[in-house]
Length: 228
Image (tube, rainbow, N blue to C red; front, side, top):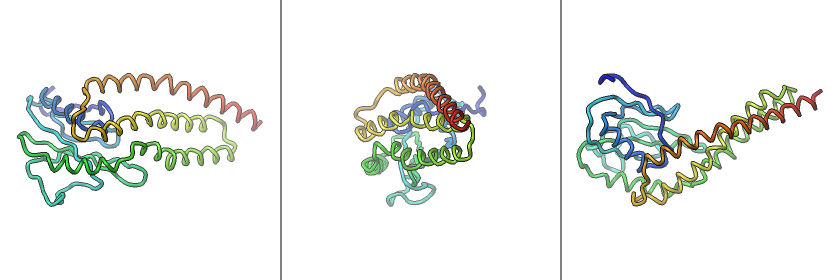
């Protein structure tokens, strides 16, 4: 791969494994894969193939875009903003700002900010988001389709999508609990193990979704029988 080519890679594990993600990016840089951009729409990295380099990566959590604004009265010129990932938690945005430097610049202001922000994170945020925002939408669509006397196929599609979203609830909670317990980086996990665990979890998603699809087919058949 030449130096001007890029490589896209999905997140190896949940973004809330903050310290582990930083180590992952540092190890990628040491192998010659330099982070260039974050693809928010599908949670993936864009790397540039280059020379191996020793880089320090930090992820700053915030509730606003970073840009060039002063952050807590300090511009931190030693840290370069690579890109930011924007997630929506319930009805408010959350930003993960990916910072980089190639020296031993102080990261105390980053750790201080993150600790203060992480303390306010609720491990069940994804569950509340699913219950308060996503599930009601699916229920409304379900009722509308039923009232319009639609066949069971579109209803089954919605149920499969809802099941896919529900499948991730437990992993998000687990990652957030680890983040809250690891603000000092004293219990950092091996990122390779996390990556393997994520691959196994995604593999198990297939039979899980097949079960949801079969149940949806039975529900669709029952709806069609009742309509007839």
